[in-house]
Image (tube, rainbow, N blue to C red):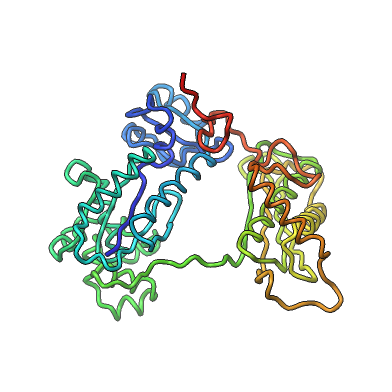
Length: 418
């Protein structure tokens, strides 16, 4: 059996844990730089606030309806997510973290368990230990556990947040209830093609012949169909080493001077290097991109990128930052107001298992230096040790005018009990 555990309105729930006055109130969470709505509580959804709404257009609506608005507090959300995932690993060792607010669990050797009771134990422990409400869907396959989870969320009073598909009758009833556009893994393009075949529900989809699905679509859709039939075909994903690592961000404000842009690129490159070292990889290539604000049509637009090939693989922040800064200098154009930049490291190889070069190699002092820097930053957190060309006060420069305290990751923001 598989379970999908999904945190209810996760970002809003994280804010409510430390501010109970927000319970039952409509809440909206904004994207980077306070741009648009990326998360809403059920109360905000009921009022008609759409996902992706630009806040400058909907600010009046939010005020009229007493919707509480918050900037994204990623340190808080990430820490709370980590706590939830660690609790889930107490119930089974086989856990796939699917996103920041949901995870798949596989139950091997649980044949004699009462899964409804077990699901309630999961839900109650997470709620008690973190304050985050979750929905639990349990079924014989991953795709069906997604369906079960949707039912637990749609009918909270009847299911009490837990729903188990453990019979053929329940499976068929669930598939007939679920619209084709709500099936996990079926995107907009696939919806249109299936609806043209008169597929309106998940049940209609599983009635299609296996041969037709394989010929018309791909092995992925065929596996989804088998999963919905109750035949496990989509297994838990193993943690894989990334083939490329990217750090891209919009700026807090538009920059038209090269010095500010070089500082941002250095910070992005250093972040990529830290991620490389964390997964034990080195890169052969660095891709640097720079673009103006495409939303301001009245301004001159410019978008450019450059790829740098390195003579030897590296995970050194010094080398990756230096090469990235040199690259952005060549693509920078005077008079343009830039809004976004990014660094991607590619051509990844294992750090301690790659082809050596006879004539060119990395300075041997870099490895122990990077190890020492990573150790200090891990110990003291908040990126205390940086390169000299980085901003020493702020790492991620974003407009966050409605930011709540980082209750669990910043000693200065811990709640004080009087």
